[in-house]
Length: 293
Image 1 (tube, rainbow, N blue to C red):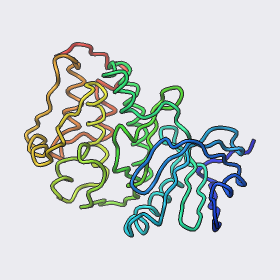
Image 2 (tube, helix red, strand yellow):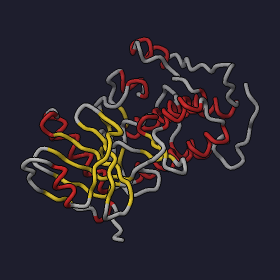
Image 3 (cartoon, one colour):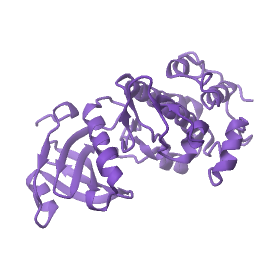
């Protein structure tokens, strides 16, 4: 079997005259059912003869996509995907380009996304949440280490493989950054966005991911959102007033609450960095405080 990975991915350019799937079949792909759908793209399951396993195939339709997506976000996504190679990120195997469509062949995560997992099972026990969140932290640490910011971290974009290991996916808003790495662009989901981003204040790009990780951790251990995003103006006020509440029906340890509070810190100079998060007692090897408060 030929090993194919992101480091030697190839771009195959062909012009499809009638049925793209005929060409994909010639390239060794059998297309299956749709497993996800967005504004300009859908994700289908497929079988790769080359890899001898199931893969996910993201299909992007250039014809229906707006100009800024085609000229800015799509090239950035493809550039980032080619550079990423980490166990905590969905692996990209191959990019296939037809006249109006781009097919991104990726690792298939068989157990769905983190939001589905929590909806099905409820709040994640802290011992399990600690393991899962650490996988997210290490993946983001890798991304930032190669100067990539994801900018759309949310439970729907964190997938579980067949062993329930977490893998970051969907790099549609990802970009490379260079210091001082300041941006005013809002992208991603408001529910996971830091107050400075929602207010249009220039922000340090990696902090986009840090705040979102705090929201993800809260959802993991509480099975609910830390803020109500149905009214964004009110949500910003709640963020600025540090109104993060915890339900008594789903107790969270003092250490867990402390870590969430330090990540969801309004003052960007005080907000936890990845190194701070990794060193926190809740995540550290001896972070076994099960006392609730």
